[in-house]
Length: 401
Image (cartoon, rainbow, N blue to C red; front, side, top):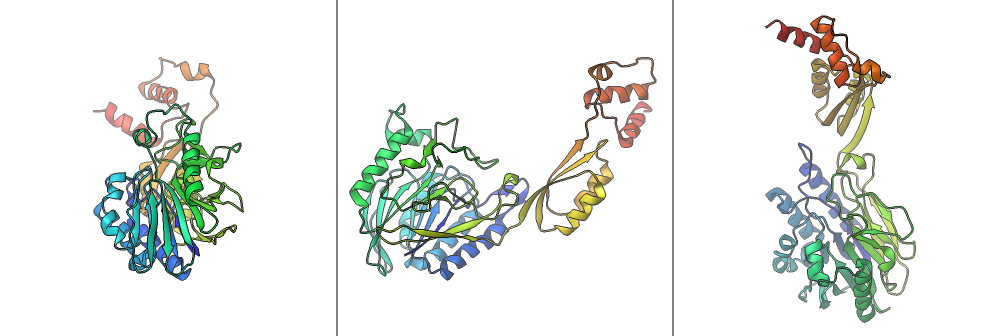
């Protein structure tokens, strides 16, 4: 069977004042087209479906339309879990109606999905944290251990008050119990989770810049060796770059977000993962690059004309632009930059530091005229940098009032 794994859609997300909805519409359409072209049997969406607990009407509409298209109106199962940006109640609410379209929405940890049957498949077994699906065109079932994101309150509901016990141990024991009971060699065995997971003994992976963090210290750090050995592929959400933290034989994969959502992701290619699986065999998977969406760029220039030239050549890019200069950025230069490019998210003026001694910065000749005195004071407040001509003109205008 073929499975498509995607995650971290963050529908409705903005980058500062810039809406990403038009890009999201295009990339959601691209994911649907990949699912159809690859003729996948199952779709997994591993959390952070929306960007906040109260998504806009437009983001909600895009979400439901995309899931319905992915499900082929009930012929192909789509399983979506909540992430740390999602309201689990909002994700759970439409589940009865969604099931009629072949969509299973799981908001809370240890949720039990009510069994149902459609033309293309049926849920043959469901207990908290686990479902088994029988596709009509497959002789074997597919089993899924599912763990949506849980905050501290939900962790207590999930695990009880004994939170002193190691979270890795609790999750490992729960997953292993489910795997031992339901995941034999006669079916395809998968896990999907929205967690901060890493391989033990390897450097910590950076969480997305500007995102709500899951890992606080090491309290919510889950190690991949907690995954039961019966699991053939683990579909993760939360980190926005594609990476396999498992092995080639037992992949544990962050599929990446569909768009670059922060400047720490500048230059990243985004993917979906296509898995080929059968019972009691190692899975194979390939990452398929997504083509839609604006690229993000962090650029630094020390010359206005060079910056303008680059901006003219990269119009379909969202930019964090740093301009280094000897004095503060002039108003006409700032205006020129914004006029030449519609996608400047941040413009950061950076004044080059001069090597001045502590004595030079602190010693001021009080016998100077008022303008020279202003210049010296300005330097003490700005790392030794002199005011530009515009500031001097403004100072003189105020002085002569």
